[in-house]
Length: 106
Image (cartoon, rainbow, N blue to C red; front, side, top):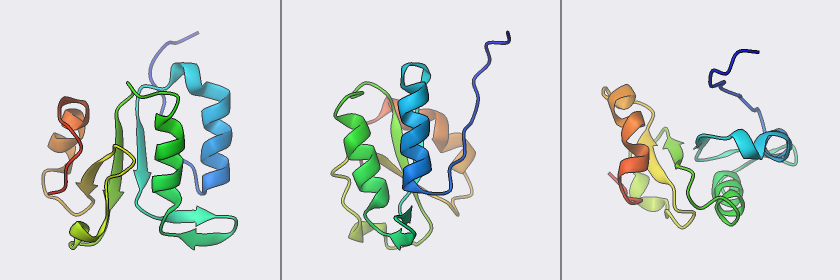
């Protein structure tokens, strides 16, 4: 069996939580969109809820929340996530630094 990291892409909160429950011991990090569907509707609190719930048991795993709008000052990093702007020209360079810094807005 190959032991390389895999990326699991989920379409909604429920699917993400199902993957978490199945693979929680193997997770290297979590990246969640700032808002995604929960219970069939787009929920602006879904990422915060998921990451907060995840952080309650896995506080040492890096987490990031991606945002697609420029006014990210309206989002509160209460879940301990670092915010990454989806349209950033240096997004790929910022991604590896998620675990290096404390949660912040930029």
